[in-house]
Image (tube, rainbow, N blue to C red; front, top):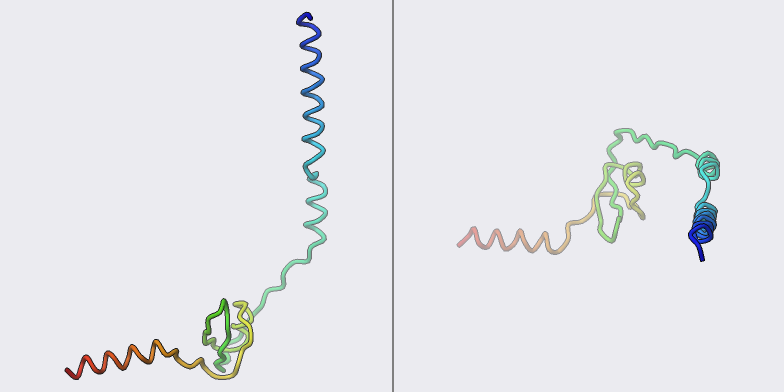
Length: 102
């Protein structure tokens, strides 16, 4: 074999590899079309009405100023009124009071 035929084989193999790689990646036009078709998120505006709600987010309960702020934060199952303190919070206060008396 001479160098000319080896060079030709390398060029053909590189061209074929570039074609395969180029055809596997989605085109820029397809990405732009998909982005244009997606609706823009509508902004949520909450007003300062103070009506506390207790809502759950990520397995934890939080008190929000109103249901709008809870929904904006992605919390679910809002109930009227502030959340009750957990038992751990109550127990910590009792221990502190006992320690202060001694």
